[in-house]
Image 1 (cartoon, rainbow, N blue to C red):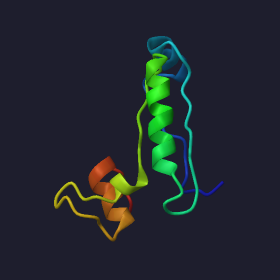
Image 2 (cartoon, one colour):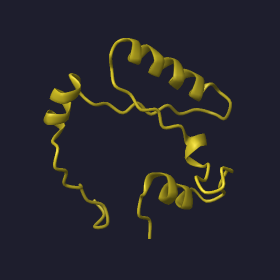
Image 3 (cartoon, rainbow, N blue to C red):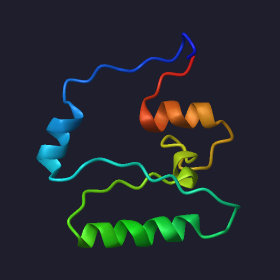
Length: 90
């Protein structure tokens, strides 16, 4: 493993979070060609999971690239991540 990659320590454990939410956490990563229906599929899946009482958060790549400062699509993924997610990228 790279020396620049490490596991962040959190104050809330996975088990604590699962008990609070009444379900385990998962990440579903949908990939595919442009305009192939990824966002449509993700929205339908989120709606169905929500109907079943599962807490969800949809993070769409198209939305990540929109700058919260200008409301327009950014050409810099690194800048968008910094602004939208407060991620530090040197």
